Image (cartoon, rainbow, N blue to C red; front, side):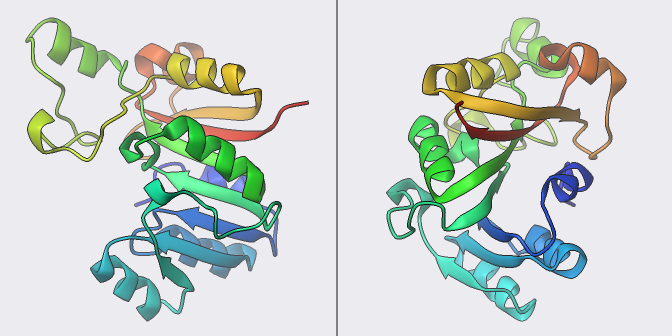
Length: 198
């Protein structure tokens, strides 16, 4: 399941050139190819996931995202997508800038560390949160830069990145009216569409 798929699909134009960073087994690219006829390319590190992408008929390159996107030229893509991966990148700030260098727009999703359930686990029970979106214990997690809606928006302002649209989702991919009113408290997953500054 791709959290926020319907929202992401609505933001991607038909026949767009799409780069999917950390594409996993290629579920998102496969759906966008079938429904929006995108010209898609995925980047993935895990060889087993790359095999799944190839079985789906997708173009995929093995690449560690921490090495950047230097192998791509400016404006090579219409949209660069990163779902549930930003928190595992060593330098999310540099990655966001690179995404908007190689793509005209970007879509980013990540788990909101300030969600009320995480706050209870940390504030009341005194341990790092473990949930459906953050399933690993603190000592064995790929998530090295956990963020909140406020953190992400503050970083975008600092980098001069324009926030075009924002949505909140549950970990099941359902929109939440409480999340839309108070995203930092009730939004489990942050879904952003961003672009270059004015």
